[in-house]
Image 1 (cartoon, rainbow, N blue to C red):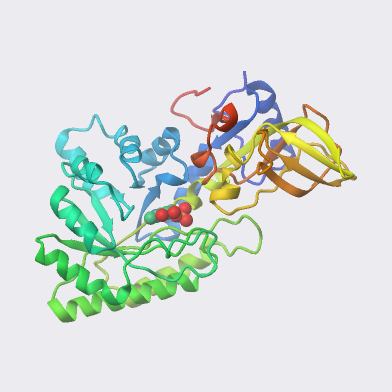
Image 2 (cartoon, rainbow, N blue to C red):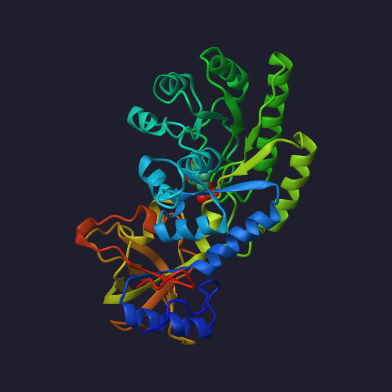
Length: 400
Ligand SMILES: Cc1ncc(COP(=O)(O)O)c(C=O)c1O
């Protein structure tokens, strides 16, 4: 039995680690989704070190695995949840706190960042009074009727230019209407505590952040000019990019920009929060799959592996990302090959252009940096079981 606490890393797999991953796959079976908790802690620490004045709320939607939530909870993270199910995954970690402490923790550490919430969810949440985002007048009416004890954050629409996942067509109030909406909430007896935005996931165009910060600063100034009131919170959302390849600028550069702009545009006493998802988990996970079939079609080699687009590779569809599929086998000679998932659907195509050595049935292949928006959106289509999850570098207990 390989010790799951052993210090190995799945981030940028080198030869020595490849060997270990191979052994893990042999031992535990495939498809195997390996989660490196040390890397998650490292990412969280990098985020909070680079942005020391920003409170990080992990966006649970990126990967809702309870063990990931526990690791981040232990590291001191706050959480962005979208549904009651996500809320309850976080709640598991605080359920034994004394009531007052638990309620305070929820108020200070959970944000419900889905601007559209069902009435039933609002009713359940009201007793906890967490921060809720909203972006329209109808939602305000629902909140007033079903969750009037919540703190409110108005999400505004900001440019998502060049981001991998665009969100601004679905969410965000028109900035020119922001102060009207805040005033409407006030008239209803609700308090808007701050502003939020999302620049789109995997935002490689840092200008989006700059424009969004300027928009928020303008709204806060207009609000103050019209009402004499200030807001307490600025939520800079998610979008922090992962270095899937070398063309992606590092968070270091983004953090320098942020720290300067926050200082320039906002009062020092404003509470700045963020909702990073992808940045925390993407490069902490690797998937190992097995070749289960091989054919030659129109002269091209086609491999069939035991995880696919309906499973852990669902990010190909929902996250608009393409994942390199790599071989453990070292060979000078490679061929342009196709790789398909295990289902009966031709849509289950992972790539038509993988450079792979000659693989045999039973050989393993792997994909790095697959921790975000992958297993989270996997289905059970065609009776295919989800990949087995193996947690490594986790020291609270052994998990098989
Ligand atoms: C409201 C909200 N916050 C945070 C996130 C996390 O974004 P990311 O994974 O890009 O950091 C998302 C992702 O869709 C989101 O919709």
